[in-house]
Image (cartoon, rainbow, N blue to C red; front, side, top):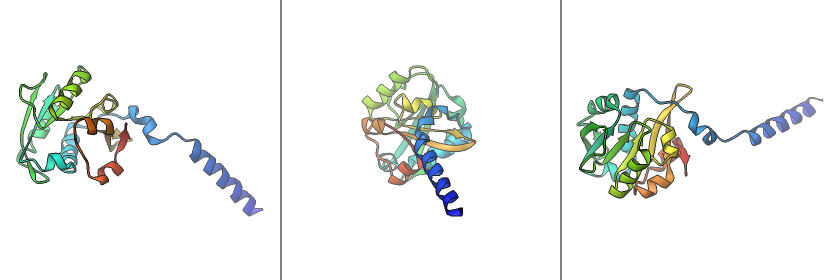
Length: 175
């Protein structure tokens, strides 16, 4: 009798697991992370890119997110792999000189900014999780008050960025 109940329970559990949607299906439901957490995560995550961590100086240009720029400026001088975060600039438009990284802080002109990044070999990042689906390469956010990392693999290729395989395992992947 007990084995029959266990067998039914296993069948129920297996069926439930098979019909549950994958975590990636909820990618649009994540919220933004606080600016201080975003800055800390990005500094750590950027060290996991061979291209970013092997350049001499890293510059970040922040568009439409002055609070994020303020937090990132606190990290100027910190090491990112073999590199150093040398400068953090902010504005509400495309910079005249391409930075190493472009932080997109609003949902306006996303397509134009993503094209700019791809044409200039600039890594696009954001704290607005839904923008990763729209072509931004790297995003951070919150799910149930826990930090999440989102990666758009197509954008990684377009921006010629490769990541340590560990980051791929920790991230929610978009294609």
